[in-house]
Image 1 (cartoon, rainbow, N blue to C red):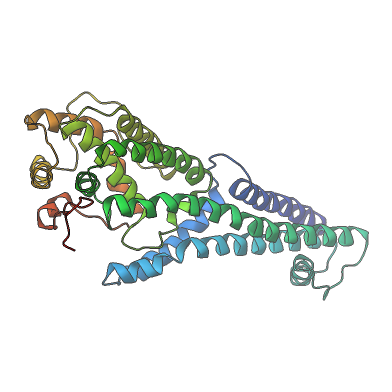
Image 2 (cartoon, helix red, strand yellow):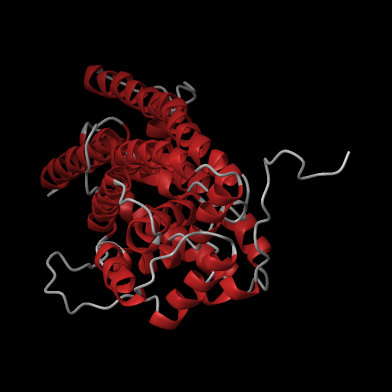
Length: 362
């Protein structure tokens, strides 16, 4: 019975340690989308704790302050979980190798994992296990240390364009703000540069935020200008421009929208957000026709040329937005992002003309 128990402990130790190594490698090293059950479980548990903490937060400012800690705590929880499971796995291995009881095996395992040397092993097999466990412990710590620069490099690249957008749209970003500021400085011809920049931004986001999914939860430095709401504003601005602005349709804006919805669908697949993949022309969007008309009226007051046929503009806008509408609404909830509702556009001040000679008195 004792031999059977020790053999079973050895098998369980091997399986448990393989699960840990698989989670660490696929979470930190694998350069592709991976559904790691152990990592998702840890993140889900931490998320439940944070949701419990933010449920009582009365203001978004307080909620944002708490949620800004979430991704860092998740990373530390990964490491804590992997080290704890490794300690248990090697304790089972030491028990299988002849240590008299599990408690003594756990002490040797902890000493070996953190290279303390307080509980020496006895015999050749136990010494080998001790060296192997020390290597595993150092490797798990090194993985986290090496992972952090890669993570923050992706974060910084993402935030450069988000910060730059504040010049083009204000804070928080709005789709009508992008068009109004373009009109105020007479720079409609430069919008193609914005669409190209964000087309590339979406492509990079699709790569980094699916292979490093924890990046999705890193909040932008300015609590009022989050990466997700900025992305939605750019997509809606491009859709508004091609659908409603009385100027030549921009193929670059169309490519930006396509790049955006393909990226959002990649994220939706990872986070298991349902979205329609085919359309028959009868779909609806969360933005109402009344809200759309209010934004068009605002743009006209700001001097933006709007198509006379609003019915055609509405149909075209719906045709663009339906590709990402369902994902957008779920994303706002998932990432807890602030948003400026389209119905509030009528209450916000217009952008005044600028960059004109003689505009200000000397």
